[in-house]
Amino acid sequence: MAIDLKPKENVSLLSFFDDLQKISQIVDAFLTPFVQIVQEFVKVIEPVISKGALVVLEILDDLQLKSELVRNYWIIMDEKLLKILKESNKRNIAEMEEIIIAYYKEEKFSNLRELFNQYRTNKSFESRFPIIDSCITVLQNTPVETSSQVVIPTILSQITGIYETLPELVPEQQKREIKKILKEQDKKNLCPLSADGKKPVDCQFVVQGNVKINKDVFEHYIMQKVSVDIYYDYKNIIINTFKNGKQIDKLQDDIKKNNVFRHKILHGVDLQYNSTENVVKCFMELAFLMKMYTQLSEENVND
Image (cartoon, rainbow, N blue to C red):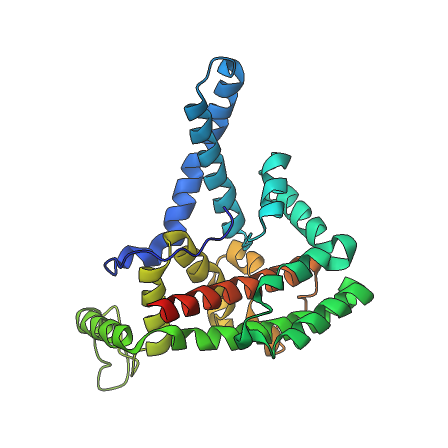
Protein backbone atom coordinates (compact mmCIF):
# COMPACT_ATOMS: atom_id res chain seq x y z
CA MET A 1 0.00 0.00 0.00
CA ALA A 2 2.82 2.44 0.78
CA ILE A 3 4.22 4.04 -2.35
CA ASP A 4 7.04 1.98 -3.87
CA LEU A 5 8.62 3.30 -7.06
CA LYS A 6 10.27 0.16 -8.39
CA PRO A 7 11.48 0.40 -11.99
CA LYS A 8 9.90 -2.11 -14.37
CA GLU A 9 10.58 -3.44 -17.83
CA ASN A 10 9.40 -1.33 -20.77
CA VAL A 11 5.84 -2.10 -21.86
CA SER A 12 3.82 -1.01 -24.86
CA LEU A 13 2.07 2.34 -24.54
CA LEU A 14 -1.49 1.15 -24.14
CA SER A 15 -4.33 3.62 -24.35
CA PHE A 16 -6.31 1.98 -21.56
CA PHE A 17 -4.03 3.68 -19.00
CA ASP A 18 -6.13 6.79 -19.56
CA ASP A 19 -9.12 4.95 -18.05
CA LEU A 20 -7.37 3.75 -14.90
CA GLN A 21 -9.59 5.80 -12.61
CA LYS A 22 -12.75 4.26 -14.08
CA ILE A 23 -11.19 0.80 -13.85
CA SER A 24 -10.23 1.44 -10.21
CA GLN A 25 -13.77 2.51 -9.33
CA ILE A 26 -15.22 -0.59 -10.99
CA VAL A 27 -12.73 -2.85 -9.20
CA ASP A 28 -13.42 -1.11 -5.91
CA ALA A 29 -17.18 -1.47 -6.38
CA PHE A 30 -16.63 -5.19 -6.90
CA LEU A 31 -14.12 -5.63 -4.09
CA THR A 32 -16.07 -3.88 -1.34
CA PRO A 33 -18.99 -6.32 -1.09
CA PHE A 34 -16.72 -9.25 -1.92
CA VAL A 35 -14.27 -8.45 0.88
CA GLN A 36 -17.12 -7.98 3.34
CA ILE A 37 -18.57 -11.39 2.46
CA VAL A 38 -15.18 -13.06 2.78
CA GLN A 39 -14.53 -11.34 6.12
CA GLU A 40 -17.80 -12.66 7.54
CA PHE A 41 -16.98 -16.11 6.20
CA VAL A 42 -13.53 -16.02 7.80
CA LYS A 43 -15.04 -15.28 11.21
CA VAL A 44 -16.94 -18.56 11.02
CA ILE A 45 -14.17 -20.81 9.70
CA GLU A 46 -11.08 -19.01 11.07
CA PRO A 47 -10.12 -21.92 13.38
CA VAL A 48 -9.56 -24.18 10.37
CA ILE A 49 -8.73 -21.73 7.56
CA SER A 50 -5.31 -22.03 5.93
CA LYS A 51 -2.65 -19.35 6.28
CA GLY A 52 -2.62 -18.97 2.51
CA ALA A 53 -6.28 -17.99 2.47
CA LEU A 54 -5.67 -15.40 5.18
CA VAL A 55 -2.85 -13.89 3.09
CA VAL A 56 -5.18 -13.61 0.09
CA LEU A 57 -7.79 -11.91 2.25
CA GLU A 58 -5.19 -9.45 3.52
CA ILE A 59 -4.13 -8.60 -0.05
CA LEU A 60 -7.75 -7.98 -1.03
CA ASP A 61 -8.22 -5.76 2.00
CA ASP A 62 -5.07 -3.78 1.10
CA LEU A 63 -6.35 -3.27 -2.45
CA GLN A 64 -9.67 -2.02 -1.17
CA LEU A 65 -7.95 0.31 1.31
CA LYS A 66 -5.64 1.76 -1.34
CA SER A 67 -8.44 2.26 -3.85
CA GLU A 68 -10.56 4.15 -1.35
CA LEU A 69 -7.68 6.36 -0.21
CA VAL A 70 -6.46 7.24 -3.71
CA ARG A 71 -9.98 8.01 -4.93
CA ASN A 72 -10.20 10.51 -2.08
CA TYR A 73 -6.87 12.14 -2.87
CA TRP A 74 -4.68 10.55 -0.17
CA ILE A 75 -1.20 9.25 -1.08
CA ILE A 76 0.06 7.23 1.91
CA MET A 77 3.87 6.90 1.95
CA ASP A 78 4.33 6.38 5.69
CA GLU A 79 4.50 2.73 6.78
CA LYS A 80 3.63 3.63 10.36
CA LEU A 81 0.48 5.46 9.30
CA LEU A 82 -0.44 2.63 6.93
CA LYS A 83 -0.17 0.14 9.79
CA ILE A 84 -2.37 2.34 12.00
CA LEU A 85 -5.02 2.53 9.26
CA LYS A 86 -4.98 -1.21 8.65
CA GLU A 87 -5.15 -2.08 12.35
CA SER A 88 -8.00 0.37 12.93
CA ASN A 89 -10.23 -1.76 10.67
CA LYS A 90 -11.86 1.48 9.51
CA ARG A 91 -12.82 1.52 5.86
CA ASN A 92 -15.19 4.45 5.83
CA ILE A 93 -13.30 7.31 4.22
CA ALA A 94 -14.48 9.91 6.74
CA GLU A 95 -13.17 7.79 9.63
CA MET A 96 -9.88 7.11 7.84
CA GLU A 97 -9.41 10.82 7.12
CA GLU A 98 -9.79 11.56 10.84
CA ILE A 99 -6.99 9.08 11.57
CA ILE A 100 -4.72 10.55 8.89
CA ILE A 101 -5.23 14.15 9.99
CA ALA A 102 -4.79 13.29 13.68
CA TYR A 103 -1.58 11.40 12.85
CA TYR A 104 -0.01 14.37 11.11
CA LYS A 105 -1.26 16.92 13.64
CA GLU A 106 0.14 15.10 16.66
CA GLU A 107 3.17 16.63 18.43
CA LYS A 108 2.84 19.82 16.40
CA PHE A 109 3.01 18.21 12.96
CA SER A 110 6.22 16.31 13.75
CA ASN A 111 5.19 13.41 11.48
CA LEU A 112 4.70 15.86 8.65
CA ARG A 113 8.28 17.07 9.04
CA GLU A 114 9.58 13.49 9.14
CA LEU A 115 7.85 12.80 5.82
CA PHE A 116 10.58 14.88 4.14
CA ASN A 117 13.67 13.74 6.06
CA GLN A 118 14.78 11.23 3.40
CA TYR A 119 14.91 13.97 0.73
CA ARG A 120 17.02 16.50 2.63
CA THR A 121 20.29 15.18 1.18
CA ASN A 122 19.06 15.58 -2.40
CA LYS A 123 20.80 18.67 -3.79
CA SER A 124 17.91 19.25 -6.23
CA PHE A 125 15.71 20.15 -3.25
CA GLU A 126 18.31 21.95 -1.14
CA SER A 127 16.98 25.45 -1.82
CA ARG A 128 13.38 24.36 -1.25
CA PHE A 129 13.73 23.11 2.31
CA PRO A 130 14.01 26.53 4.02
CA ILE A 131 10.58 27.28 2.51
CA ILE A 132 9.12 23.88 3.43
CA ASP A 133 10.50 24.06 6.97
CA SER A 134 9.17 27.60 7.38
CA CYS A 135 5.70 26.38 6.41
CA ILE A 136 5.82 23.62 9.01
CA THR A 137 7.05 26.09 11.65
CA VAL A 138 4.12 28.38 10.86
CA LEU A 139 1.74 25.43 11.26
CA GLN A 140 3.31 24.59 14.62
CA ASN A 141 3.01 28.11 16.01
CA THR A 142 -0.23 29.41 14.48
CA PRO A 143 -3.79 28.01 14.49
CA VAL A 144 -4.28 25.94 11.33
CA GLU A 145 -7.33 27.95 10.28
CA THR A 146 -5.00 30.94 9.89
CA SER A 147 -1.70 29.31 8.92
CA SER A 148 -3.27 27.23 6.14
CA GLN A 149 -4.23 30.43 4.30
CA VAL A 150 -0.53 31.08 3.75
CA VAL A 151 0.94 27.57 3.85
CA ILE A 152 -1.25 25.97 1.16
CA PRO A 153 -0.42 28.46 -1.65
CA THR A 154 3.26 28.30 -0.70
CA ILE A 155 3.39 24.50 -0.82
CA LEU A 156 1.41 24.50 -4.08
CA SER A 157 4.11 26.72 -5.59
CA GLN A 158 6.76 24.16 -4.54
CA ILE A 159 4.65 21.38 -6.05
CA THR A 160 4.52 23.39 -9.27
CA GLY A 161 8.30 23.86 -9.30
CA ILE A 162 9.03 20.13 -9.02
CA TYR A 163 6.20 19.16 -11.37
CA GLU A 164 7.62 21.45 -14.07
CA THR A 165 11.08 19.83 -13.83
CA LEU A 166 9.88 16.23 -14.14
CA PRO A 167 9.93 16.16 -17.99
CA GLU A 168 13.66 16.94 -17.81
CA LEU A 169 14.19 13.44 -16.40
CA VAL A 170 13.35 11.76 -19.69
CA PRO A 171 16.57 10.71 -21.49
CA GLU A 172 16.92 12.26 -24.95
CA GLN A 173 16.83 8.94 -26.82
CA GLN A 174 13.59 7.88 -25.14
CA LYS A 175 12.16 11.35 -25.60
CA ARG A 176 12.69 11.08 -29.36
CA GLU A 177 11.11 7.61 -29.46
CA ILE A 178 8.06 8.72 -27.47
CA LYS A 179 7.59 11.86 -29.60
CA LYS A 180 7.56 9.67 -32.68
CA ILE A 181 4.84 7.48 -31.16
CA LEU A 182 2.79 10.53 -30.15
CA LYS A 183 2.98 11.98 -33.65
CA GLU A 184 1.79 8.69 -35.12
CA GLN A 185 -1.12 8.71 -32.68
CA ASP A 186 -1.96 12.28 -33.73
CA LYS A 187 -2.32 11.19 -37.35
CA LYS A 188 -4.89 8.61 -36.31
CA ASN A 189 -6.80 10.60 -33.69
CA LEU A 190 -6.70 14.27 -34.67
CA CYS A 191 -8.18 16.28 -37.52
CA PRO A 192 -7.71 19.92 -38.49
CA LEU A 193 -10.05 22.83 -37.85
CA SER A 194 -12.40 23.73 -40.68
CA ALA A 195 -11.94 26.94 -42.71
CA ASP A 196 -14.02 29.00 -40.29
CA GLY A 197 -11.91 27.83 -37.34
CA LYS A 198 -14.55 25.51 -35.91
CA LYS A 199 -14.44 21.79 -35.25
CA PRO A 200 -15.88 19.72 -38.12
CA VAL A 201 -19.12 18.01 -37.11
CA ASP A 202 -17.78 14.58 -38.04
CA CYS A 203 -14.51 15.00 -36.11
CA GLN A 204 -14.04 14.05 -32.47
CA PHE A 205 -10.56 15.54 -32.03
CA VAL A 206 -9.00 18.77 -33.24
CA VAL A 207 -5.34 19.66 -33.75
CA GLN A 208 -4.41 22.42 -31.30
CA GLY A 209 -0.99 23.20 -32.70
CA ASN A 210 1.98 21.34 -31.23
CA VAL A 211 1.42 18.44 -28.89
CA LYS A 212 1.89 19.30 -25.18
CA ILE A 213 5.06 17.42 -25.74
CA ASN A 214 6.91 17.69 -22.43
CA LYS A 215 4.04 16.57 -20.19
CA ASP A 216 2.82 13.93 -22.64
CA VAL A 217 6.32 12.54 -23.09
CA PHE A 218 6.82 12.33 -19.33
CA GLU A 219 3.49 10.58 -18.77
CA HIS A 220 4.38 7.96 -21.37
CA TYR A 221 7.87 7.66 -19.88
CA ILE A 222 6.63 6.89 -16.36
CA MET A 223 4.07 4.53 -17.87
CA GLN A 224 7.10 2.49 -18.91
CA LYS A 225 9.29 3.03 -15.88
CA VAL A 226 7.07 2.69 -12.80
CA SER A 227 4.30 0.43 -11.61
CA VAL A 228 0.70 0.81 -12.72
CA ASP A 229 -0.17 1.96 -9.18
CA ILE A 230 2.33 4.81 -9.30
CA TYR A 231 1.22 5.86 -12.77
CA TYR A 232 -2.38 5.81 -11.55
CA ASP A 233 -1.53 7.95 -8.50
CA TYR A 234 0.36 10.44 -10.67
CA LYS A 235 -2.30 10.60 -13.36
CA ASN A 236 -5.31 10.96 -11.09
CA ILE A 237 -3.94 12.98 -8.19
CA ILE A 238 -0.93 15.02 -9.27
CA ILE A 239 -2.21 15.87 -12.75
CA ASN A 240 -5.61 16.87 -11.38
CA THR A 241 -3.95 19.54 -9.24
CA PHE A 242 -3.07 21.37 -12.44
CA LYS A 243 -6.45 21.35 -14.16
CA ASN A 244 -7.63 24.81 -15.08
CA GLY A 245 -10.69 26.49 -13.62
CA LYS A 246 -13.04 25.83 -16.55
CA GLN A 247 -12.19 22.14 -16.53
CA ILE A 248 -12.81 21.97 -12.78
CA ASP A 249 -16.27 23.47 -13.14
CA LYS A 250 -17.24 20.70 -15.52
CA LEU A 251 -16.14 17.90 -13.19
CA GLN A 252 -18.51 15.90 -11.06
CA ASP A 253 -18.95 17.03 -7.46
CA ASP A 254 -16.95 14.21 -5.84
CA ILE A 255 -13.85 15.08 -7.89
CA LYS A 256 -14.22 18.77 -7.07
CA LYS A 257 -14.51 17.93 -3.38
CA ASN A 258 -11.52 15.59 -3.17
CA ASN A 259 -8.89 17.53 -5.08
CA VAL A 260 -6.83 20.60 -4.17
CA PHE A 261 -6.86 22.60 -7.40
CA ARG A 262 -3.77 24.74 -7.84
CA HIS A 263 -5.21 27.02 -10.52
CA LYS A 264 -8.15 28.35 -8.54
CA ILE A 265 -6.15 28.79 -5.32
CA LEU A 266 -3.09 30.49 -6.80
CA HIS A 267 -5.20 32.70 -9.06
CA GLY A 268 -7.42 33.90 -6.24
CA VAL A 269 -10.63 32.19 -7.39
CA ASP A 270 -10.95 29.61 -4.59
CA LEU A 271 -10.88 31.46 -1.25
CA GLN A 272 -12.24 28.62 0.91
CA TYR A 273 -9.26 26.27 0.83
CA ASN A 274 -8.02 26.70 4.41
CA SER A 275 -8.35 23.40 6.26
CA THR A 276 -6.10 20.89 7.97
CA GLU A 277 -7.18 18.29 5.41
CA ASN A 278 -5.98 20.42 2.49
CA VAL A 279 -2.74 21.29 4.27
CA VAL A 280 -1.90 17.62 4.80
CA LYS A 281 -2.88 16.66 1.25
CA CYS A 282 -0.59 19.34 -0.19
CA PHE A 283 2.40 18.20 1.88
CA MET A 284 1.75 14.55 0.95
CA GLU A 285 1.57 15.46 -2.74
CA LEU A 286 4.84 17.38 -2.49
CA ALA A 287 6.54 14.41 -0.83
CA PHE A 288 5.18 12.08 -3.52
CA LEU A 289 6.67 14.26 -6.28
CA MET A 290 10.00 14.39 -4.44
CA LYS A 291 10.03 10.60 -4.28
CA MET A 292 9.26 10.29 -7.99
CA TYR A 293 11.94 12.84 -8.89
CA THR A 294 14.57 11.21 -6.64
CA GLN A 295 14.06 7.64 -7.80
CA LEU A 296 13.73 8.45 -11.50
CA SER A 297 16.89 10.59 -11.27
CA GLU A 298 18.80 7.76 -9.61
CA GLU A 299 17.57 5.34 -12.26
CA ASN A 300 18.87 7.57 -15.06
CA VAL A 301 22.28 7.81 -13.37
CA ASN A 302 22.50 4.02 -13.07
CA ASP A 303 21.35 3.30 -16.66
